Image (cartoon, rainbow, N blue to C red; front, side, top):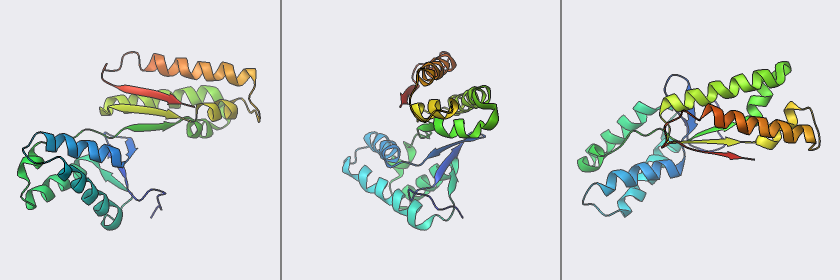
Length: 184
């Protein structure tokens, strides 16, 4: 059993994509479903909290399939008599967060070439999954790691720009509704 720093499991969607099950995403799903009904919106927050409690206190695994999560939510809502909310649940994948630092670590001795291959694979997997948001974290740390630098240098700046360009190129054909951000 893996101990997660956040109490919620990872959500698996697609063949190889995982994302953190995050409270804001759950809240958005519940609010969107509740908006389509005649129920007050405050119910969405109660439902979100209920899903969080179930996943953190009663779900034993560190991952849950996206389809299983939505099936469990819908079944619970129906059991509570909230059929109209269950019918409006959209199975939207959670935001994907790609750690550039982790990709740099995984690159091993192949360094930049392997890093850019891993980056491309991760982006394609996230786009194919249908996620609405991709966040890239650790840009500066990845550049330092790949250049084997302890301090920021001109080589780091050049590689940082290369990584930003690679992300933009990889996402140039992505659906226009996909939101993405690079966070240093």
